[in-house]
Image 1 (cartoon, each protein chain N blue to C red):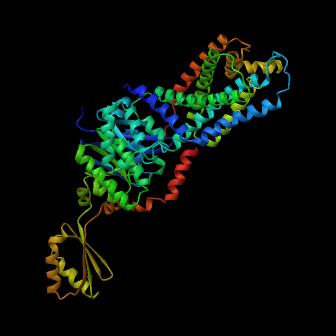
Image 2: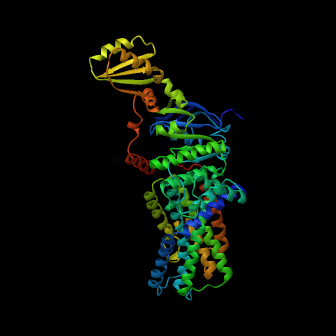
Image 3: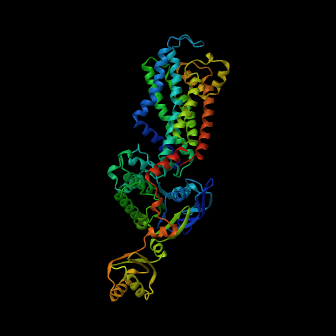
Length: 333
Length: 255
């Protein structure tokens, strides 16, 4: 078996003239939480659908747990668990029935079934709702039930497509903690897509930033942040006239990589702001420059995204209404 | 447990549970054939159709036709449930399971046939209440076989059409356009010999004709083609429609 749990090279998906996925390549290690971060329409769900055998790729190679996703579909399906972006529960069945039916289709014996369903329901804290029809569940409960369902066949890889979309902030945090616990408890490999930057930052061991069907950066969150340069130290001066003086004095410091001036603020870009701040403050003190405010900002993943794509991920999110419309449109075609 | 059998069983059980939990679906689907039975039965009770034995009441002639109708209508129900499952995502959950498309198709078909069969049983009970006479238990059992075969044929038809469509409203319209002619041209409401010759050829191409003829033979001992012939024809058509259904399912859109 191959070294990687997921292996993808030059994967392409075309719909007519439109290329949804434009030749992406990446590998996912066993036991890591790997994130696909990008705006809606970047090709995240398309990739998940290819890897989970729901749609066929146009070209390229993709292996999950060593099996070819287009030639060994059933083998792939046996080894994965999926939580889809849109709900996929039967809401006229109870939570328990949804899990029980799923486990039966995956060929799990009766005695194991009971045990695993119990364990999965405990994991997502839904034991007391097991016999309630899913139509009476809240959005967060449905999501949790779907995560529980994805675990029943003890998959090698769990795919989570936008696991927290449409949930309130508190529920989101809850779901994220479940996902973390899964990896810690079962050493499960998790492939996750999201357009929430904080989510990717909080959860993922490695992140691929995907935009317009291409991976534009792939690394650990830390390295991604480092890759776009250092911290920003901003000094707001009391008197605008002091700017020239302090810039002159600071030019001796070779740790400063870049300088920007805006009104009476100076923005210094440097590798490690917290260890250089003392020197900088001393220089200002010696030159009698009065400083009103100091601020250190570390680059965020948001900055990384802007750096690589030239725009903010939030501009691309689209309103909820758009999403509903998109789904309706997809259904009516 | 074998996964394929488990999948068939699960999808069948699911259809049943959903059916039982939805009283409006039960009432709605039984009400339509029941209204046909009551109003046509009342309206035509004194009409004499040429070719019918004189000792045969119209209501006795009509009941098998209405039973065929109730099995025919299962096509729409099964198709719409497939479209809803696609719309609401449950289809994805089933289609990514490590089982063959054939099992998924079979499970859904059996589910649709079973729920339609329950409706038909309810119709039979009601018919007996309003004066329908059953000749023999063996005949009753034989009629069940014909009903199940009709169900198999038309549920697969519904699933085949639904697997290539995604528009729920459009599906309803197209199916009505298909189902009502099938119903009217099946000998369900009047004997075939009252129809002009060229229309009769269409009737002979309609599998429902043989289904209803078979039910009539079994229940009231009045059959034009003979029950064995009916049975063989239905069996062949059912096998064909199931295999086309399995093929359609292997190509069906999931999202």
